[in-house]
Image (cartoon, rainbow, N blue to C red; front, side, top):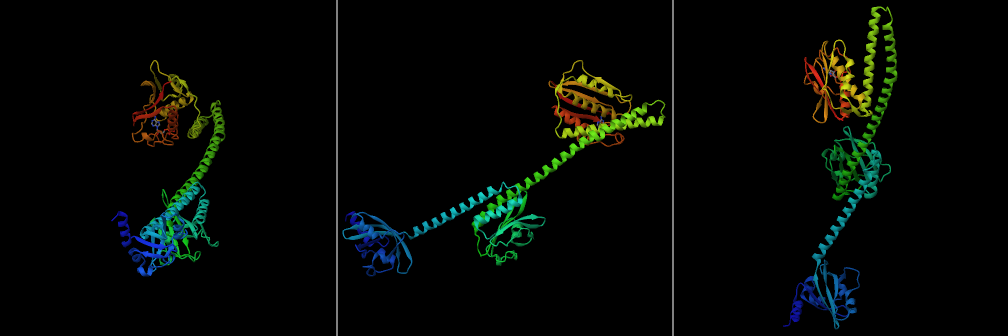
Length: 525
Ligand code: ADP
């Protein structure tokens, strides 16, 4: 037998591949066993049956018998049809037909299974695209709201956008305030539904449950959920989806949607709302931070204003009258023949006014330093000259000694500020030394780049645990030896700031009851 004959023989007897012959009118004149098996009809039932009553079209293409007739003889025409089985269930057949003489030959196979898989795939692809679209919407909402700085406006626009893009019946945002969740914005089909301002304890409702658990709650039928809380403002609610809102610092509140029919939300809604709530959490936190920054800023500006008002008040209302009082007190003290008591009082007034004036100066320097409003004019400074200018501070009870090498590198600095540092250190050495304590002003080169300046006293000293506090603002060290000494706790802080602004370092080594050495390291010119 030739191959073609063998093939035809197999087709004629096949129970899986349909082989049928039609006349030119489209009536069956021969059917192999496969067609009888697939249709559930006997061969005699099939005979003379018109193609159109056995099959229906899958698509709207013209019936293939006419196409086959129209095609040149011997040309195969592909076809796909649904076979109506005797039991009514459809079968998809795919194959080809050819016109040979005055009959049409059809070969086709059952592709029902394959067709179902294709349909499932199409459905899956459709779902995938729908989700992609949702996520794009979520992303677009997120990117629009993340830059809104006003929290109320942020909430309003989020619920509005969710409603217009997803079409949910009712959407609301709830934020934690104390132990309650407060509705910040809500929008629904019913224009009278105005949940804004409503609040509920965190233990209540689906919203509360989602907040407490930190996980979204999808409730297909609220009548079956023990957490559901009926509210007269939303009487027809049937399904609910509550998604917690998180910021980096923890839970912030809940995003909630409700619908008026059971099973209105599915897993895709949950995913979309979860993604949206992540973005919303970030947006809320941004807006809060921005508001905090703004109020901090306003507070700082106000403090700044107060500071400069205070500084000018010190300058005008304290220092000026003080110098007048001091002038008068000096005049009185110098009057010939004044009683000894009055002379003592005038002397006291002079020293008190000096002290207040010194305090006022220190406050002014402090304001300028803290506001980074100090302008230095750097130049090459001779350290010996600088220390020379400090020696006049010595008094009868505290001799001052200069200990300088024959030559000393110059330092780079602002002359006035460095003098202020040295005077502060020398004044402290005097203040915190008993009568007779010698004060030594010393300077030596340190390494290749620095000059070390020291102010050494034989005073009360400082304990090791107090040393780290010395250079901090308003720090005074209280003990028996210092309690009678007046001071502000600002001098060393100002010294440190000035020295650091010069790229230098300040420190102290001390031994209680023996004395202290304060040192300053400054860069050479
Ligand atoms: P004050 O105006 O109180 O002197 P300072 O900032 O100059 O402020 O000094 C801070 C504290 O450091 C002082 O209150 C004092 O207790 C301590 N102190 C400063 N210099 C010396 C020193 N030479 N000897 C001992 N204690 C000192």
